[in-house]
Picture 1 (cartoon, rainbow, N blue to C red):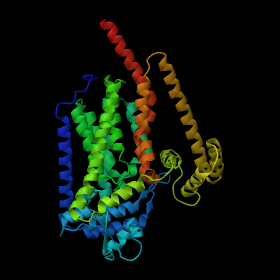
Picture 2 (tube, rainbow, N blue to C red):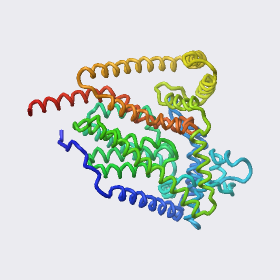
Picture 3 (cartoon, helix red, strand yellow):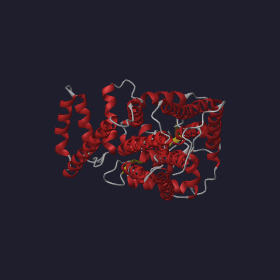
Picture 4 (cartoon, helix red, strand yellow):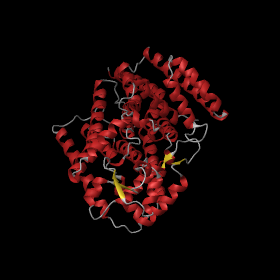
Length: 492
């Protein structure tokens, strides 16, 4: 094992100014990139957009690559492609700030914008009006417009799949090199349960995973021990997420790098469950959030300043209230948590088809609104759902429940046993619990959006990784503490 310094290099004077300067530079670069994108030569763009429309129409609105996995949202895919084609080279800056979606003037706008029919109308020349989708940066257009000018959508999916698998392989290799094979195996299992192999089939889902994997590989390869560089890394990660992502799984670009740091520190013996770690955790969280929120807010201000309509900011505020579930009761905010946990569980029921997903969700919602105690509601829900589930699904749920029960008993036993000898301590368990619960805080805060579980459930993948590896962390910490005391005793 290589030897590293046990502590991080402290923040140097002027770090805050340099961090703000970096964020300003990033926003300028984003503005320049999206403004230059409409000027890219069209080449075969129209032809590839027509073929893409046919492909999405064939796959349907909710494309399911595998039976037991939540569907891909092709309506989101259609919106992305519509924006790429609508960008106007005659007014590149205004077009980039507006990020228009083309639609036909007859009928409801939302029925055309949020369906594959909107893209079909556009490629057939029927769409004559433009709706502003300017509350997002839509950084994906920077890559997609040049790619679609020379490649078909099917080939772009293959390219993204290749990139994802290369980064995934690199992350596993570096995990084994920096930690051990158990950590790498748990990472692989969590990614598979999160539907990682199918991400390349959605242009909406892929960006946060590329950002997360690159951040992890940077941490593993260079073993960064300088706090200022880590601050800049988390700022960059949060900012890029706001630039590329459409609220699919933004949290993974924060939690994956955090876990990568923790595992490396634990392996080399520099991990300490103390207030320094908690302060560092808070610092990185604040920096990532600042990069994410300020980058997003900068788009609203720039768009309205250039377009002069003040529509983007109003639309963004209304959507924030809607996505946060404004006016939703606390109990109903628990509903998205249940949906998202259900989606990532093995043997979960597919979310389309008669007697499958929608019926189950309707039952859960009805039971949630029924008066009575929580145990009574759970019993009622089981009685309602059990008759409509296939026997294979019921068996899978029973097996999964038993495995989880045994696993939790093992974790509790390790925790109780370690108290007698080398405890992780209350602060350590608090830190682990906080890391694990990050996506569930997000689901509570964004209840209006998180009910779209087939999009948002992947925020839990880092938490699943941490959950799978928890006994190993506890045992490794115990062994490391024993080794430290032995070395200290020998020295004395």
